[in-house]
Length: 401
Image 1 (spheres, rainbow, N blue to C red):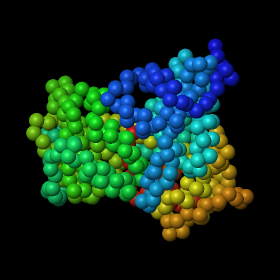
Image 2 (tube, one colour):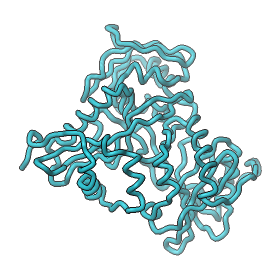
Image 3 (cartoon, rainbow, N blue to C red):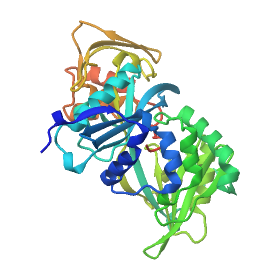
Image 4 (tube, rainbow, N blue to C red):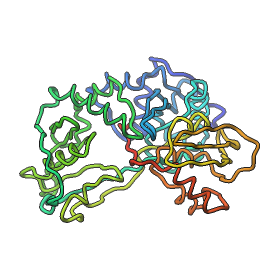
């Protein structure tokens, strides 16, 4: 049995591409289609990959790209978006992932990025590296027979059925406007848009190619399929910049003929259920983690976003993996933060994971305190801390990576 000491980590080269692809396919249990290969290599170029090598065999991999992600206050921060993390099943539990993440984090720190984010395939791995779930996703299923809108729900109209090719420029423009006002949403690079509009076969999962509903301030992309005797409309991506666009698009989606069920993902504060006469028509089908985050530089990250309430406190931040922790004076006035290392006694103590969880404003400090993951003696301090970090609008992941 090989140990971590027999494995070295190095930057990948183009010659490693086939082995990296094979490792990822085996790790994630899928085959990548040839119709997406041209895009995958541009979204996450091989020269941003790190590989763990035993002899001449690649047994581990991680890759990143720098993303611009929206944070509370309609500000943006540059973050390392990590993807493709895999260790060969023959080499598990030998410290290889730790070696990869040590190198990955060292590079992120050298790049001066205050935040690392990723979408995870497993939930038990990354806490020890300082990560925590920061955005949750909610999947719903709607029985169209029960989806009557309340008389108070607007009917703005303005939705047209468009082809994906013709709608592409408008979709990009609307997404960029939506990203600017949505915490957690990242910029979408040209290569990702290329894969998006190519509508590759692997992403269809047996359903049709994409249909497009287009509004001046929003869009809904959906597929049709038949499952267990029911006609399904699966919403692949829904983006609405304004309440009118939201209402108009949902009225069309829930009013289509020959559709029994509409499936979609919505934000935590989506008002859809309250727009219907029967809110039980909107059934929760899945609740899971959409995005994980780790704060790499506490002062840089905390001063990049805005806050809902004033605060003057000292945080004791424990970093279980790197050296980003310490005591930090955090002062917030009129939504703007100042943060710097201090020798003052802390009033709030937490792992760096929890800062990542709270960062986009979707999680609650009181919940983590109840779970004994935030230590604070004074309940008024906890309330003030939680109120400051809570955002006015629920965060959403822009795109899965």
